[in-house]
Length: 312
Image 1: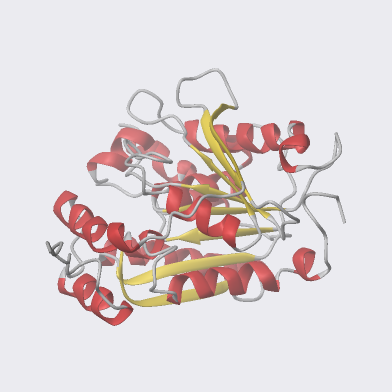
Image 2: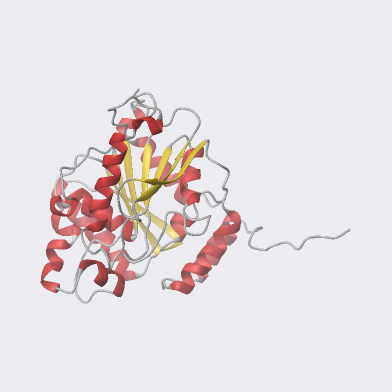
């Protein structure tokens, strides 16, 4: 009888996974990204969503494609997850695991998920990301049938961006110029480990997106446009985010608190690095998943029982 070798990573407990992430430290680079993926890839549950549509066009550009994951029955909300990638890279499903893990995990929780790609720098600099998100939301308004709703219905939508994706969501939320049109109503916004303060000198990725002219940085920074908010806002930061990235979330929290007279919802993820938060979704390590669910299910629009399939 032949015994198959056991992959130690596949047998790792949530505690072991957390220790492996902590051992990588707070630096973030291509090697840390690959090592973090290796920790979570064998532990992610990719059980199929009941309804799944891949590479649906929401605009004319080759990057204007999105994936949809939907449970078979009623759903609590539609969550739009905007991936990261340093403004110059990233994909909604680059390797068959990430970020299908998020779409399928949300579907298993009874929620619909929309995962778009967006245009990338340097070919498409600021404000391409925010404009593309506006196009995604306009597509949602035209595509009620995709979610089982009647034509013209606008189901409750939650925006969730991570890293560069959080920057694009923040620009969409706060900056009328970047958005390029009136804001579309959303039920809530989640910004995780994002880039909100545009100050010289910029790292290569943000430099490619926000441009050469440092005199324009202040007006292109999402934080410069913070004002009163109608939708609930959630900010997430990882303990092992590099300091210059973590600073962005704390600065935004301060600006939002001043503008609104109260603090936004802020989550601190102990033992996580810049990408382990989103890569852990659907794995046995449930700390980030539990907090995401807590915020979504605390939203008034969800607690009131509105249904994104029948208009509730």
